Length: 236
Image 1: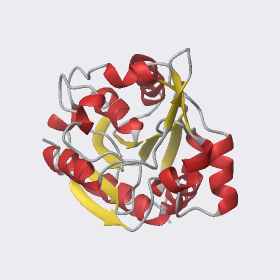
Image 2: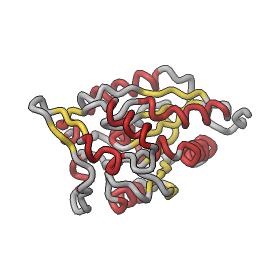
Image 3: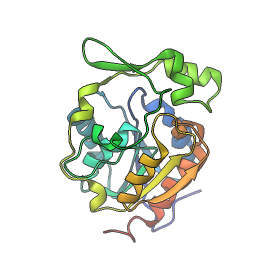
């Protein structure tokens, strides 16, 4: 299968905190099978600036219009990095979407906390998800082995990144789509819906955990492809 003439070819995928790019494997396979050029960013998770720089390096490599996709913390990253001129559309996958001048931590204000999403922060300021609650809090619908692999390969994030504001929210200038997991036990669904609605995103709800980018790769891929088909026509 090949992309149609109006469909954007380039897709860039950005992972979130406590994870790396390997969770995108299913989405990568599906989009490549439909003729897309798919590149996965490996965020260092050391600061917002570092993650944005890593994403911009990959965007610089693209040869034209690109759909930029972020999961979880990756949503904050694409909100900043999405100002890159190659980016034609944004896809938020159970992802944060701060407004201009806002930081990640502010997005939680007024919304319910999730007791199963437990972050252990070390003396150096980096956080890991607590192993005993990892599966239920992050990947409840994943198989036991897949959830254990995610748990044991997680990448810690510098918690100070959550206090860094974005300078200009790319969704204010570019069309957006969102996938929201109904059984997300990392983020309050009301918070995700609030952010996606504020961004003017076309929202798709799916029965899944926070690990929706991995466990529902078919639905996520279809939303990304919808964005690739329509972003140029919906330019703001």
